[in-house]
Image (cartoon, rainbow, N blue to C red; front, side):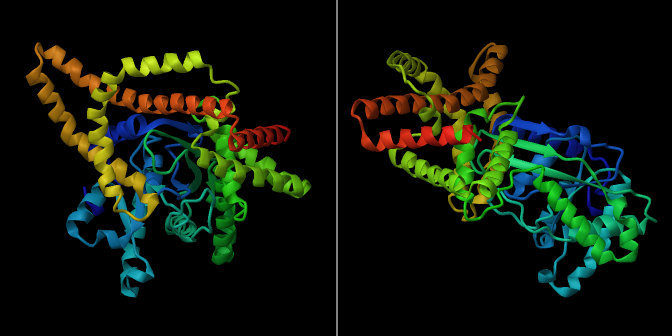
Length: 442
């Protein structure tokens, strides 16, 4: 599979996608919530336009949440080595040349443009990240014109018969870099590029600008967009304080609760500036104090931490400790080894991509090895197979064991703060309760 037939179906790619998708959706993330799949019509000529906040994980979020073999566009400089280029073409990635790659290299985009037409005709779907580069803020930045130019020029080259549609995609990661987080993908309603044909024929530049402006608006409508730079930290933190407990809710995901919260705050800023400022101020105070006292919002939400429950929890922790140790065979292999490379990477938005990529490669190496060892060491064969299958399950158990241990210890810590009538903790709880009540009143 090379550039010349990148739009064709690839059985090898399909196999790799199924394996990598399983690792992405079930192991790396603890939950992947998808909304708006009904907006994807595989018979249409589609461009997917996701927000770009988490490096390579943004593209994978689109790839692993709908069927098919879409084609991605990426900067051309990563294609310089032939061996790397061959891998990228197999992964269905096409290069895009920029002025910084040399003015003469821009001619290469003519060939890529013709190939995108083949992609549309084959109904693969094209994925373009219209912000151009990533940024670790829950805010949509200025879109590049390239995505609109591709849509118009592809249609123009085919006599305006393609009827290209652009689907705005909202991506939200509960945490950008940690394992076992929640990924929410929202597919918006398709934008009919044909609505701008007559304007494009009259004034291409104006049509580009109007389509880009509309795409920007509709992307914001399908993602977490915090407009205020001044109050960004306060509003972003407030989402976790108020809606953190709903992270795994599939019926009414935290994503939509966060959007409602941000909308309420935007209205409040216009109607009651002093109350808005008070909420933002309390949010930052609670964040700072909680970090100082090493507690989290889940623990603050609980009015009581019964000693009986905490003791029972510790007994369970002690009893299951051997299973925790066993589970770390899996976790140390697939979680800790990638961290060695993460520590060398300065851009934090690449940490998740590195963790996922290395852990997936390690899975291809170590899981067959662990299976062979299990079959050799344990007899009969079905017992060895059963023990092998317990490895990933025990790894997930060990991860949850670690979280539960910290929650129990946090409960003991809070009981100790209450018993000693710690002034800082009393202030934290007072501010937290006041903040929750103020937001609830909205």
